[in-house]
Image (cartoon, rainbow, N blue to C red; front, side, top):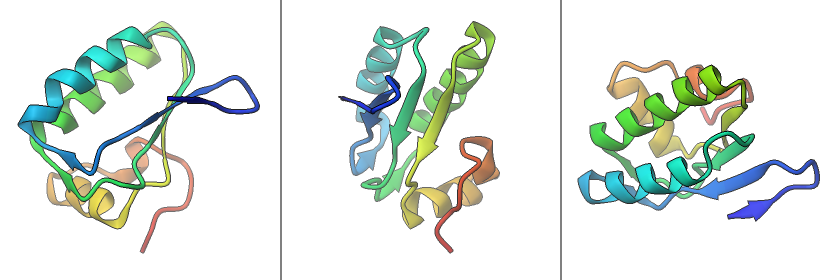
Length: 99
């Protein structure tokens, strides 16, 4: 977890986001609820459905709370997994995505 210059917290996602990563991700996100948050997905090599559900839930929760949550620097594997699972990568970010 790091702070950026504008006071927004950044959470680094692990390379493997499978079933075993879902509960710790949920706990970490709940501990950060209510603050503006960026999630660095640059190291993600594998994204499973459970972690995707956690991220989608967090996106809706942050939206309901009036806070910002955005995925930064999504890896190609992260973007490919989103597309494979039927999710538009721009659901999480408005920035450029890897080709």
